[in-house]
Length: 359
Ligand SMILES: *Cc1c(COP(=O)(O)O)cnc(C)c1O
Image 1 (tube, rainbow, N blue to C red):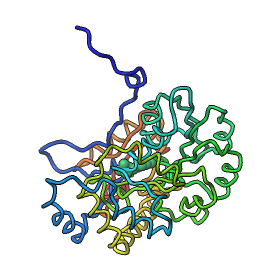
Image 2: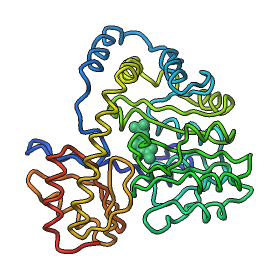
Image 3: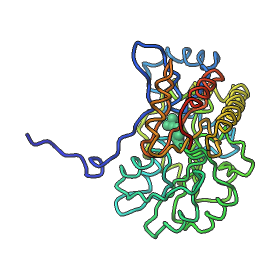
């Protein structure tokens, strides 16, 4: 039987591997595999969602007017500088779709967010992966050297998922100086709310200085709305308009829009929770360092163990705890573990203590 064939770029796509969800039926696992927020949704956010549920027979506001307005107010920018989408992965995809195609190159660090190779290849463009420097940091000098006149976009992930460190302001500014104004620089700040490194780049300030810079942020991590899919980008009106042109109509649901609005209203409460996660991060990583683990500077809600060839074995060791601890292994490279509740982190500390080697 002859079937229509997908584009070559699609057939060759690597598949996104989601964090493990655990076994059905058994004891609920400690799920630290997807960098989710450990806190339950706020009552005010749940109320907003149930209040809006009576209107799900209607299409949502396609332009997400109220949410765009609220974000514009929060950031002190005009609304035409704010694009929203069904998760920042979708927004990143639209940015690349809008700017890249066959014959173009997309430069990003590796290892970094596993959606980058997929989203880049999907456009037909060629990914150019630049190895991370020591300590899981972006090697911005090497990335600058990797750029050619075919480079249409650069993806920077700060803090870097899965290794943890943020990009420094000074190295970022030096990098931007060398980038052609025709190349779009995309700063993915999915974990920016968890950053405590005073030298880390803040995309919010940087966009005012660089017209070819666009930043992507999300409600999934700090705001605990991963299940509802809301992300956004801030940049020049031309970039925002291109993102909007690529967005699937009505993809940001009405429930997502009201949940995001309610979360912005509850921002102090949510950011207090972020502080708790940051404190747990410090406590957990300090305990692990005392056990002899070498952990790169964690600026997100997760930390990285560069276990190399033992990555899968280390994840299996955590999975053998009772109840199982689900981490996110990258075979041959390392294991990423999300900062959970204090009890969950204590379980990780105990489980890692009994692993026979250190990295
Ligand atoms: C989680 C994550 C995102 C955002 O995901 P959405 O849920 O689609 O908003 C984006 N970039 C990185 C690096 C992430 O880890």
